[in-house]
Each structure stands twice: as structure tokens, then as C-alpha cells.
Image (cartoon, rainbow, N blue to C red; front, side):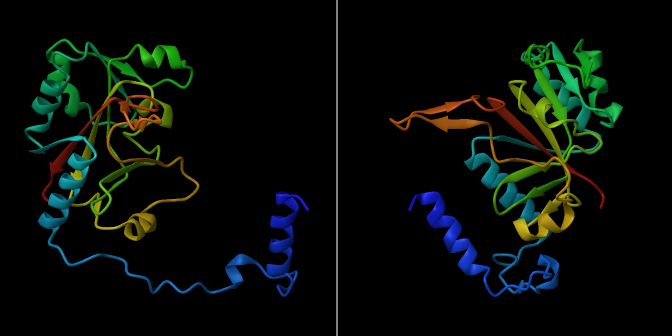
Amino acid sequence: MSSRERVLARVRRALADVPEDERPEDVPVARDYLRVHGERTPAGTADLLAENLVDYRAVVHRCSGAELPGLIARLLAGRARTALVPGGLPEEWLAAAVAEGIELVADAAESTAGELAAVDSVVTGCAVAIAETGTVVLDGGPGQGRRRITLVPDHHICVVRVPEQLVDSVPQALERLAPARPLTWISGPSATSDIELDRVEGVHGPRTLEVVLLETDS
């Protein structure tokens, strides 16, 4: 018996007593697992997110709404001549960068990988950020764009609105996300290691990830 046949046989045995008309949604699933590890204030949750992002070698900044345009301009200065901008990103976020001569490139469906690679940086928002895992999640919504625009350019600036886009745990994040959306989960810059465990960044995505925690009045 091949490995494939052995696996399929086990699946058939496991399903032998399942009625043919039963659907997955007919079976209740207990969700009494631990949802959050510990108790935190909103400020503590933001601190934990920042700590875990830094642990993944992302660069973390904090600012107010009034400070954001100037901060983005500074992050792009000296690194970028062009910045990719998805539809729905607030124009005021990049106003100072434009004044400094940064050329904004609109996200276009027909853009090739080569054209995206020629862009220096990309600036996006996010759908949610998870403190316990140091993860930002994009779902292709307004201000986030298609998945490929955050995987091809070498420098990604991601703005997280705090506290409204911040959660403690993965279960809390999943409640906010639609599974049919094109979800991109990002924990630090792209990285891999070879057989000698030498870390190489920028292989599967941006070499540099900068996360801006935008403090709002919420």
C-alpha cells in the first residue's frame, strides 16, 4: 500500500460514521480555548505589538495624526524617489512627501512585477494588527491594495491606527477578517535561512518593513 492509499484509508475510516447529508456547519465546535494571554490596557497592547515587531526586525514608529505626513516624508527621504500608493490611502498622509519631490505611483492592475520592482517604496494601511504575534494583516481593502504591491517593492511603510485596528490575539483578529478576502499576514521583513542558518532578508517580500503606530482619538 502506498503512502497515499494509507492516508486515504485513514480518512475513510474516520468518516465512516458520518451521515452523508451532514454538513460542517451542522456540527458545533467548542471554542472555549484561551483567547488572550494575560490582561492589558490599550497602551500595554500597543507596547506589546511594538516589542514583537522589533523582535522580528521591523522598525516601529509612533506618531499623532498631525505628525504622520512629516514622518512618512522622512522615512522616504534618502531612500525613495518613487512610492507606490494603493487606492483609498488618505491623500494627506503623503502630502509632505510630495512636497519633498517624491513621485507617487498609483496601484494599477496591469502593472507587471518588473514595474513594481522598479518602485522604491510602498505605503499602505492595514486591516488589523495583532500584538501577541507582532503581525499586521492586510485584506486588500481601501488603502491596502493588491497583495503583490506589498511583496515586490523592497521597502514597505505600513500605518496601523491605534487603538481601533489593534487586537491582542489571533482569535480576536479572525473575528474582524473575512476569510474570502485576500489576506496577507506580515510579521517583520521578508526573511529566510539557508542550510547554514544564515539569515537572508528580502527574498519573498520587502527587505525593510517600517510600521507606524498612528495614535488616534478613538
